[in-house]
Image (cartoon, rainbow, N blue to C red; front, side, top):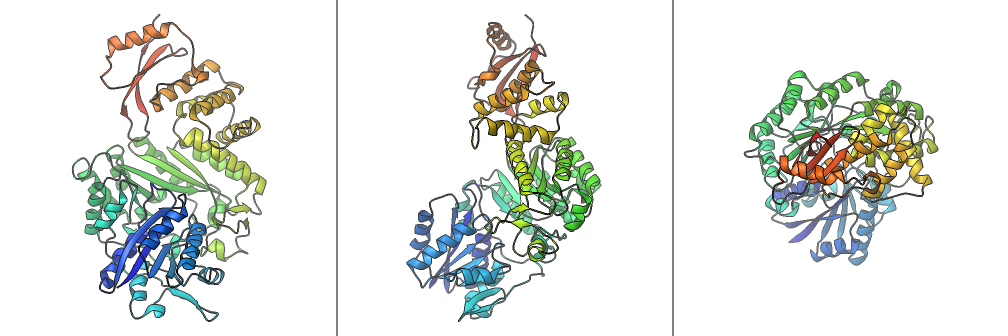
Length: 557
């Protein structure tokens, strides 16, 4: 019996991968009488020798890899090593990074035997049958001649569930993924999802069964990989209602489900249902991408900015779910000035996370195939990030990268929420100017890369307190509150410490009013500008923001 090793390199250990398990159950269902199968997951960060050893220990006849922009370099390097070790092993690549450029993959990497283009659950069983090279979706190079084949799927998704016993044994508490549909109703020029055929849905009874299985497997986050979860509003409502009905009983109340949605098509009933979901049970990611009407038209999106903003504000007003929004820098017709304007508009929504992404020119996307229509310079190496366009220069994109670094550390970390609110309400500076100026301040100070949180807090205090209109005492109080609310170490960074003999009495007063429970930590501080004593016992944490509950009483000398 021949052996097939189904492999993937994930971006991080915490991420699991659904693709190899879809291949595993799909092929095993039809080919188990002639082949044995194993799944091997690694990461791009681990020593490749370890992954190589695990693969070779299976003594496989066939090895498959699922390829993405984040793992293609390491995957090809590993494949070369496998082929050099045993030239008889058949190497197969699949996945979005190779599905639309089979010719270059095969001609530039002669050690690769086949490239699959399409849904592997259908292609692999056919390949392993008598059809082999005749199977739709199998490309190869033979005698100097390329044989290219793509498999387009447009029927109902009826593949077996990937959630077998072996999957759950391998998951080990990592982030779990689930799909209730495939395909996308939209055709954005920068994306591949619109090329995956019309939207197809898995049976609802199967999805409900899988939700319960994943909820009980130890994973704390279950991510739906549907490209537009609410493209069918009735199905979206049925899935969310099922989660709501079973949350706290069949579904543990510490599990969170993540969905990618199109904010502009949320109808009234779905919005009301989301507002009634248990706090922390769900979170949503909504892609804005741009506020520029010309840009949106250029990438095949309608200008629904007003509706998107209106619905995101409604979602945020519920306070029961984490909301993540996205912008993409480097899109057609988007200048530096218009992107900054869009950034400030997006920031004003006060989403829990604002991701500033940079355009990648993907193989197979309209932007990748219609170069004259979408002129730009981009890296020839993965992840094929845009370097410049006719509308934005390389230098300007570098400025955006610098601002993005501090956006992540100051805003998206959730550690400086009150601090940023204070500064932006009292200093004449826009959100983008704040992040960009702080990035330049750190660069001038010779600070780069990873910085310990306490050192970063002190640097932020020094920078923010230097801004015209900032009151050092009020800034200190805002940063101190943020620190106590988000960090349970009990350590106060140097710039925020004030020597005050009255603090001991304040702590004693708090103990009298609220005796500390055994086994809990407590931090007590004085807010001078508000004339308050605040304290936190780090026992209750907000399910959405991750911030601890802080209590306060008037500070009476």
